Image (tube, rainbow, N blue to C red; front, side):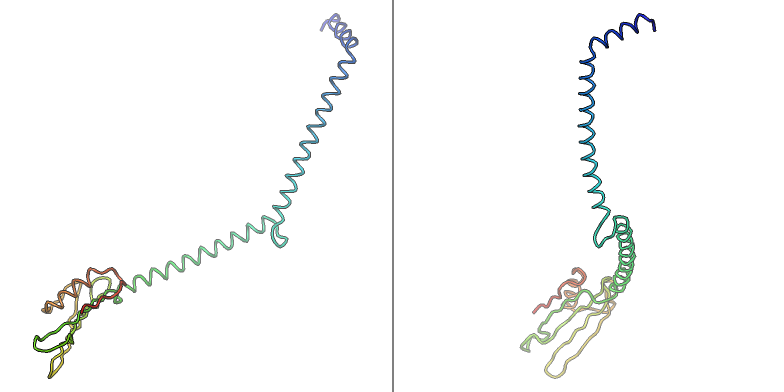
Amino acid sequence: MTPNFIQMMRAFIEENLDLILIFVTFVSLLSLIVFISINIKLNRIAKKYAALMKGAEGKDLEEMLEEYMGRVKQASSEVAAVKERVDKLEEDMRCAVQKVHMKKYNAFPDMGGNLSFSIALLNGENSGAIITTIYGREESRVYLKPVQKGESDFPLSPEEKEILEKAKMQAGFSHSKIEL
C-alpha cells in the first residue's frame, strides 16, 4: 500500500468518524438483538430436550427406548411361538371333521315319517365316513362307509351320494346342513 492511500483513508475516517461510530453501534445493537433471539430459541429447545429426556417415572428417553425394544423383542418371540402353535393346530385340524352334511328321508314308501338318515363326516381332505341308518318297522340297520379323498369304495345310495357331494362343497368348519 502506498502512503498516499493510507493518508486518504485516515482523512476519510477522521471526517466521517461520527457516522462510522453510529454504524458500528448499529451493527453491535443488531448483533446483540440476534444473539438474544438465538439464545431464547436455544433455551426453548434445551427445555424441550430436557423434557423429552425426562420421561415417565423419572426415566430418560434412552432408558425408555431400551425398555421398549426389550418389550418388542419379547413380543416378537411370543408371536413366533404362537405362530408355531397355530401352524401345528392347522396341520392337526386337517384330520379333524370339518364338513358335515345330513339328510333325513323315508327309506320305505309304505312307512310314514322321515326316520332314516345319512350323515357325511369329512375332514379338510374330504376323507372320513358316511353313516346311514335305515329305519324299518321290524328292524333298523346302521351302515358305515369309509370315504377317501371324496370317494368311497362301497356302493352309495342316491341319498349318500347327494350328502357326500354337498359335504365336499362346504368350506372347512362351516355350519352343518340338515335336509329334511
